[in-house]
Length: 452
Image (cartoon, rainbow, N blue to C red; front, top):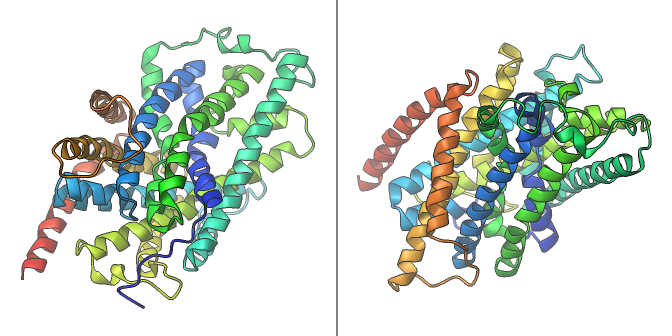
């Protein structure tokens, strides 16, 4: 292992673009949307739209910081530079924690959907196999990760575009078994657009914002992008298109094809609708796509956790072994450690298979909300540093700052408050104080060790 070799800049434009696409499409959309639709009905579209606006500003803030200084540590490095070493320490470890919990959710989805074909298989076994395979591929060169994620993401993109096009054909030409009842009127004909009022929409914000988790992954790729100044702004700008097409577009089509009251909250609406379209083997194919989406997010989780531990190790905020790279210029030690902790997800699938998905997505969201919040705070302070002449101005600027920063921060606080209203997501608010207290102890411990 080498302690001084930098990460390889091997990710090309097509890798970054598809990683950015794939980062926004995971089990939060394919699986989590089922429960969200059962709660809010068509009003879920409002939650996704408002959440999407917040994500747009978060990503533009991150994009400006990335063009200022493209580094693998990304938001943890910016937090350290503009907010102080303790926020930088908390951000790095919280993002690691968020992705570890996210991978637990993704491998849970793999376990659930493998049982679509093999119901006798225990739910914990497919997650174990998936984690082992993706762990092995992540230990190879970063280009292997990029290629794997490219094809994972392409499968998801083609599937959703196919759903939208097929759905539009059914709606406008009234073909197939759904043709007689399909139509946009289904969005308001079954109890109205907001059948339960505004509160159920607010209660879905946890699921909605978890679905958006991963959009910030392009920030972690900055240190391994071959041409970050050109590629990263282009990928960041594409976020609003991805939100409109892949979230609002797909969910609008699903709830127009089938009344929201007919969807099963325990079954992916994508699997259900493709099955109802009458295409041979459609449900089986989309089930495979959902498993692919989960594997993609798991792949991204192993990638990002390894890089974040490498950054923390470089700064002396994690054991120095994490600052090393293997022969393929991959932070193998960080990937080893992350994979071991991710095995907790396999254990939870054995102990509490019915509740594990909501529990771990809620816990993951705490770390992600912190990360998004610190991006906005660091960006606001970066702008003040530019105005004072202490930092160079970036060519790619976030619109609406600093007012947009504060409004989106307020929205993130609202999402955190709404976690308390759901007993399953409430566990995140029990875990959060313990996690941040542990980080405080860890920070002062590492500072004392460096001073000795």
